Image (cartoon, rainbow, N blue to C red; front, top):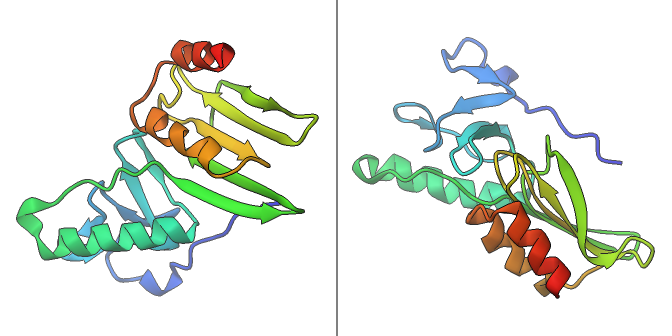
Length: 170
């Protein structure tokens, strides 16, 4: 069972920084000019998905830390931090992998494999598109290469009908 976590922001009380579900940051990772957040504590706007995120995975913390440092050190050439979130975990002999933001979806469809075999890829739809505002893909018991190609589909905001048609043709 995954129950989530609470960001440790108590130490920021009285600092003048805005705290919500973590340190509130913009799409560049800035909480204020000269103050940037990264990792589990940063609650930033991801322009790819059009929503605030706080991602609790080490891969995100590393990538966000690099992006925050780059933006802090080169203020005239800042770039938004707009990743397709990714995580993986090994649970009970199965690898679980996901790309995207798997919250608030309208539909989940198995597009490869099947639930009975405990080897499958599920696509999550929101607003008629693979990504829309909140969606992605989840793989259980599949090799990493089975889901890597989906990352591009999430990033490119592929239309849902194209995803389902391609899955049925395969």
